[in-house]
Length: 318
Image 1 (tube, rainbow, N blue to C red):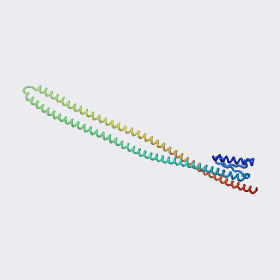
Image 2: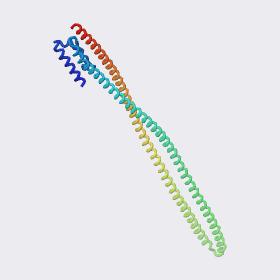
Image 3: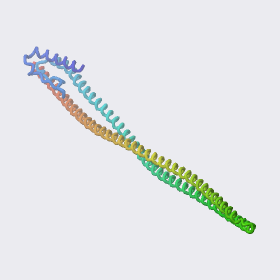
């Protein structure tokens, strides 16, 4: 709208001067802004009546003032919006940095706690395995000692029974010899003694074999139970090591993600610095444009005073 009004005023000036002179470039000197758009035309008003000059002076001044005000308002709005955007970006970056620092601190604490838990778990596992093995050894030793004691007791009983049987047999032999000394039955007695000895050997051998068989069965059962428990403990240790490896891999991936996020924040910080430098350039440009517009306003005032002087001189000459 301002530019349309401005062009209409220039057209009006052109129509006035087309009636007075043939060479318009001699009288018109346009003033341009930083984009090359005309702001106002400086003209020689010596051949224009004062009431025409006064009639176009106020519209020109209003156009210039409104143009300057519009330009300043646009720059200020751009500056305010850019400042708000920059402030929001900085606040967002600060919040994100705080969250990342907090998250990194929490993860470091968790990683330290996990390492401590893993070390404690390893120590507890070793202690548990050692304790179980010692307990199994103690139980096995007790069982072997009990079996040995039982075997020794049975052997003692068997030996005592054998001694008693031998003494009884000897008594029977002596009695039998004494009774049959006259009957010439010594051959029968020898056969009885041989048969008795054979039966005693078979009985003793059978008892010993039964005891050894029972001992072997108990020993194999205990050894199998111990092997099964050791196997379970080894599987538990392997499972703990596997869980530790998986947890370490997850922590490494999480640390890599945090490093990537930190690099992105650094990139955003660099972009924010670039935005800040662009804002400073915009502010300097606005200040320069304001200075130029102020210079144009002062020049317009000087021209207006010159026009008034020229008109006053024309009145005196007329």
